[in-house]
Length: 110
Ligand SMILES: Cc1cc2nc3c(=O)[nH]c(=O)nc-3n(C[C@H](O)[C@H](O)[C@H](O)COP(=O)(O)OP(=O)(O)OC[C@H]3O[C@@H](n4cnc5c(N)ncnc54)[C@H](O)[C@@H]3O)c2cc1C
Image 1: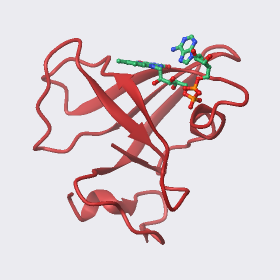
Image 2 (image 1 turned 90 degrees about the horizontal axis):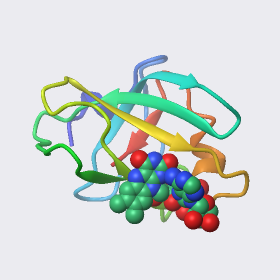
Image 3 (image 1 turned 120 degrees about the vertical axis):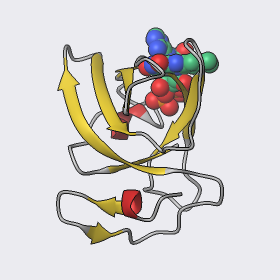
Image 4 (image 1 turned 135 degrees about the vertical axis):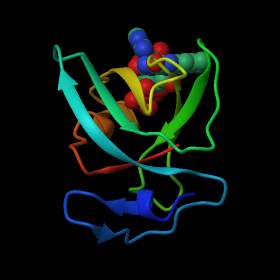
């Protein structure tokens, strides 16, 4: 994990929770809401992350002692400096009921 990526860019606040081992803490750089069921978001990309088109990562939020992770297909190309994801909004979904509220500067774990 990159130490600077564990900071909240909006307020440069250090995180108040432990990031599990082997988990990246990345910063949300943009969020777009399309409908009440669909949004997309972009996060910083850890330099060490390599992937091929069509591969997925596990995404979670650092809001619980045992974070919930869900599979997300990477929508951005492998050469992009950021990672983009499209997400459903499930009203009572364990992850997306909270994930849909993310804002620029928030932390997403991966
Ligand atoms: C390999 C893989 C890649 C995935 N990639 C994405 C992705 O890029 N974007 C994304 O939004 N989800 C993706 N998913 C689904 C994702 O992992 C979660 O299920 C989703 O984010 C909802 O999480 P949740 O905890 O809020 O609700 P969950 O408890 O996971 O799901 C609640 C309900 O919503 C349904 N559901 C979940 N995801 C979707 C969806 N995308 N479209 C329609 N119905 C759905 C489930 O079948 C279930 O009935 C992927 C799943 C897998 C296995």
